[in-house]
Image (tube, rainbow over all chains, first blue to last red; front, side, top):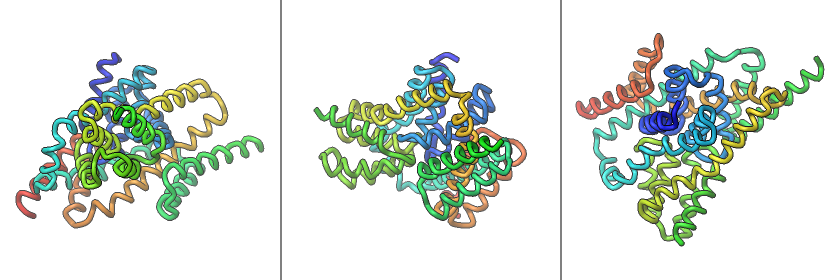
Length: 179
Length: 175
């Protein structure tokens, strides 16, 4: 894949990235796993957790991981510039118009719809992740504990990732010791 | 001089903000207090605009704040400065993962990240249900979107467009 092509793909991704960064996961899966078969579904899921473990903006981190995977250092830089290209010009050229448009009832209607579609997209992604994972007792345990920690104890994503990454690796180490 | 400050402030945000776009807002608030680049009112407006334009909110807000502070150059500088720390970290982490892919700890870590990812995203979906699905209209639209995709998956843009059109129609007919 040429760097220019990569730039164009990331421009497209940036342009349809509406309703918060989490939609990056369904978009990445659709673009790089389903359509182009350049990256495996497993990789995308790993990058999602890694992108949240690093500081910075999750959607940008994820784009850079994929960019690096496909074309190394330059791929990461191109991904970074590509994914922000359309949003950048939207803000620079339209900021003053948009701040008055926000109160228009049709715009608000469209935004309401986009908000609902984001939930549908995330639910479909969870379903797909679930179907494609190797689900053993280890998977179920970590999944349920992660979910409970986030929902009940309200730990931040980064704290939760660190906690369970340590627990999971520690558990595997202990089991290896016994085997 | 403003460009140096602008670069440093947004580099700092990129380095120290964890957990997505809205985590950058406390930093932007701090900036509005220390420098006279934009007012608090403008910050609220920037967040609103950043949430509805395409792209990650955290980056859009940086673009907008840069624009308010120092014009289009400031805008480009703030946007890039905020992503630079991640760029270095992503490259380092990717290299380490590749180099140590046979290492026991790296393999265990990757295996553990999968159920964690699933849990994180499920929590996001549950967290969004309450603020977004407030009435029967939203429930019907969500159910409809899930139904049309249960058998075959479609392009994410497909759902976004259908839902946006549904929203405009609802506003048009004042349903």
